[in-house]
Image (cartoon, rainbow, N blue to C red):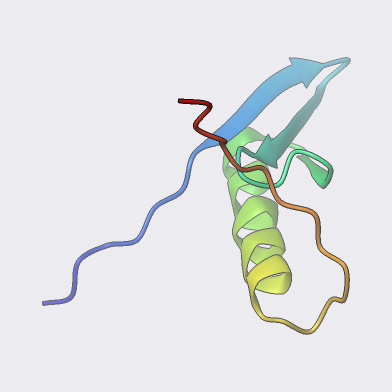
Length: 66
């Protein structure tokens, strides 16, 4: 059985909507009517951003200074 892939995301509720973005892609937000709906949209967003079909996708990285 293959290992499950996962990614971290940030989410919050505002005025009845669930908002969120993928931690590695903080410039690309999405929303849902419920937390489960938001997760569906985040999965779709992840596959769109990692497919190579969208040009110029900005990604978060970490730089070691020493």
